Image 1 (cartoon, rainbow, N blue to C red):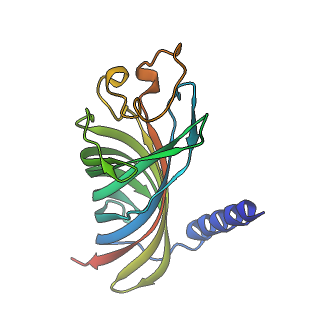
Image 2 (cartoon, one colour):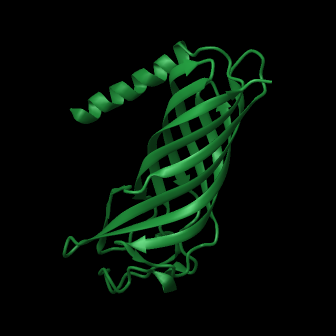
Length: 220
């Protein structure tokens, strides 16, 4: 029931954003924060189960919006972010959970069309933890993701606007290099002895972010 109510609220906000969008946005500079939930979308080794990772550390974002239409709110957005993305794996036999969280710096260019965004993200990992313990073993040096979402204006005035943001992030490459040899959970969680790890098991994360951004208008 709660899921249905949440979906109704989100789709209502999206509809309002399209139908009642206000004046054209000038050049903007924004500062924002959000929280993520993450889920591994790669094939999971037998003996392990997926679980949702609810972020404990907020993301911080700086954004530039460059308009290029005189008739519609269409432009390009550039985000510079410090983000934490995670996933949780459960031992099928014991039920023990292991949460992996990766913090990284990223840059993301996106196309902005009347509140909706579609873009590409390039992230450089700076730290990784498993259940709070640092684990730097064989992380890929760069993470690539696609992102889709919407920025819903909730307050607008001459100085700028406050948006509520819903962003989905789809990781395109695996977290680790040479995953079959560098699986960080190999000594912590069971998997079937006859199951052979491959790069298809290298974790890739889908995350959903909810947050706010305040955009300051820069009139010129």
